[in-house]
Image (tube, rainbow, N blue to C red; front, side, top):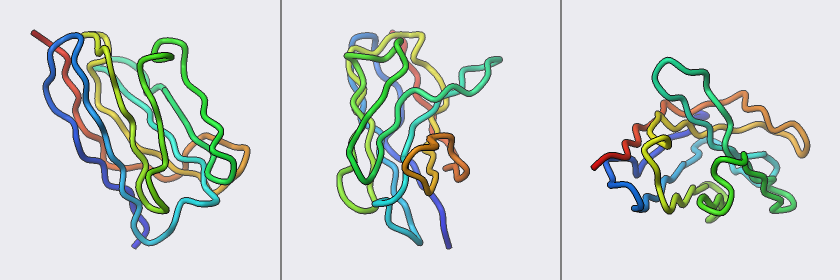
Length: 119
């Protein structure tokens, strides 16, 4: 069964760090663009980072540049290291995938995982 499963979310204080992981099952991500998106309450889902499997190219939305790092740990695991977290980073985070080298919009989604940044 083709699916994505996220792990690593939780509650963290402002300025803290969290590492989210996304495990792909039923396929390897070598020829995929893997991404992380987030959705805050009452807001639209926003893609915050992606990585191109064949090249390792990464892109980030401005609000997380310099704080978040997306990486492909192996053929089935993609991570998002989040540092210097802010309350506005609070959201449900979704791992996404698309079998492409240029189209980064996901057509496969994980179930989502909650990240809460609060003191």
